Image 1 (spheres, rainbow, N blue to C red):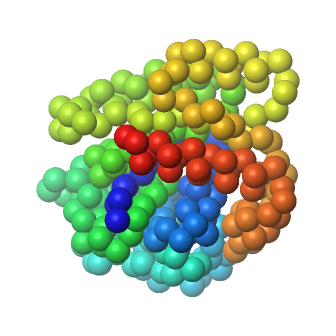
Image 2: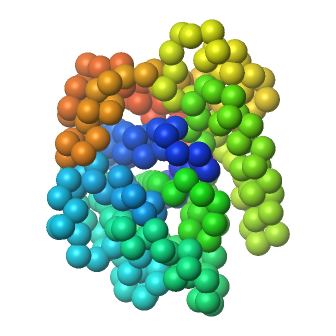
Length: 252
């Protein structure tokens, strides 16, 4: 097994972070890869993507990080498992403050299950605190979904600085890939997308995810985009992106 841990992060919400984690993970699973999704966001949107009834969640990643209980792994599809989040994760920054080695708790938890999977995908909260630090330090690869708008582009500088600050703890940590989401053919989208590709030429994926209503509709349906609307642009784009990502991982 290749066994890669991939963190998907952006400090700005609404960029397609959770949709990307769910769609890439589901696509990998369809290809026969064993995949674990980890939901670190207190909004628990990735969890709701596959388990619409949040009352069904009895133990979450919060309990593992704060109380040290084993990761609550739930099988949601063939080849696809999920570690759910809960609303308690909204208070995780405070709850983790006084714990020893708090920045590396997630890495330790994942080391106990890593051998079961080809890929582990981590969905981060839209913030740069202790929880995201855990996700970055646990990762082999860090991917950033970004909408082609001016503010998210400026936010990349903050993300760069955050990653640089973590290199004291883990020298190998870096941004490994950037991809564009919610792309349309308006002039501003094209200008910002071009600026992104120029600034991050070495790590920007060729595949862009086009704006697609089916992606929004599939969230919370218990179905991935490949089940909900397999012929949609969303399904086609995430298939292409996943293939590009797998090729990148195989040569990196």
